[in-house]
Length: 118
Image (cartoon, rainbow, N blue to C red; front, side, top):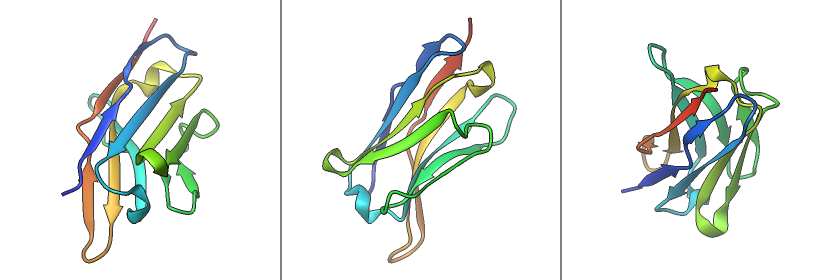
């Protein structure tokens, strides 16, 4: 059973930065995709960023140019560097991992709150 532990959330002023971490219990290179999603109050879950084993990344339109996803296989951790934070980035951020072999499975972290407010 894969466990994902997200951390690093908190309260930050607009324009500030935060780095989220997602520590996986398994070897992250075994996951087809890892990423971050978020859910703001009253809104649907939204893709933030994803990364695959070869290092290719994708980003949601609202965070392009401000957020960077990265990974460190040595410590089985995926990071989300968030810069130029805006109040609309306020949400619970969830780490996600997907495997497709032997069957498709989605794993989720417990969520970490990010609040951007003056």
